[in-house]
Image (cartoon, rainbow, N blue to C red; front, side, top):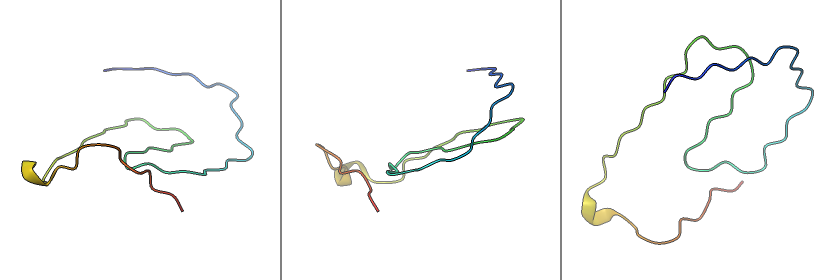
Length: 57
C-alpha cells in the first residue's frame, strides 16, 4: 500500500500515551520510508485463543 500524507504546519506541543498494545507504532516527525514487518515463530499448539489482555503500565 502506498500512502502520501501532507501535514503542513503541524505543531505537536504535548502528547500523553496511556496504553501500549502488543502491536503499536507511535511516530511524530518526518520520515522518507516506513517499513513494517512481522513474523510468527510460536508453534500452532501454543496459540492462546480468546481475549488478549492489553499491556498496561
